[in-house]
Image 1 (tube, rainbow, N blue to C red):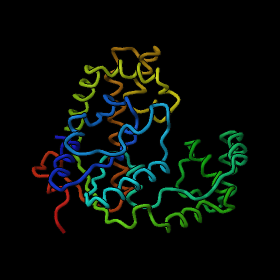
Image 2 (image 1 turned 30 degrees about the vertical axis):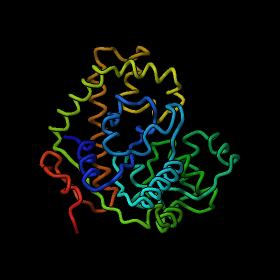
Image 3 (image 1 turned 90 degrees about the horizontal axis):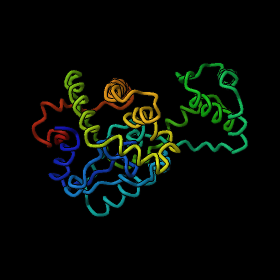
Image 4 (image 1 turned 60 degrees about the vertical axis):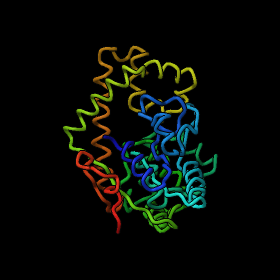
Length: 289
């Protein structure tokens, strides 16, 4: 049994509604490749922040926080418990601490930084941060660009900006947040991933991607580069032989699994970890106390 079914059972037992923090469930039509909860599952328990954007419309953390806060406030008024469910750490973080940067970057400054070659942007960023780059991934041009924009706009180094950011209250600081992570052994995960990939392809993933492409999927790089979708696009464009499609999706999913496990171990506060294979009762997800 997966996290969707356990989430449904816990929500049913506790009068809760589910708020998605999955970065791909926002998009209408991205169903098979995301293992989106079915209409039957959503009929069992109300779900929020699913199918709220067209595939070509990007979502960002600011929009997500505003939408999630509106949902949580409404559920609180109605006396309903809130169960946040999903595997996207970037959006989950909104419930654990500050995520929205208040530094304003002017269009002129953004254009100025965008005009710099990657090497020049890195050099300028190092020049402004003689004390170091605070572990910034310098191999990621987007992160270098955003960091340079913020340093120039604020007139301060990254260390100061990060310390100031960390002192801000999170969007849900007025709520008690209890975090449980469902985990499985690597061998079991590999087996489940293989079965899921075969099932997605058998259910029509390639057809789904063709339809999404016609609706502007590639205008939204975050969605178009998502695992399952990018490999099918490569296949449709002749960059990947059809016979290698399942193996490519499986390989990339396993790489993401490894990255996610590391992120959850190192980037979130201490939390409860439950072996999904040994879970027997939804009450075990969040025991009293």
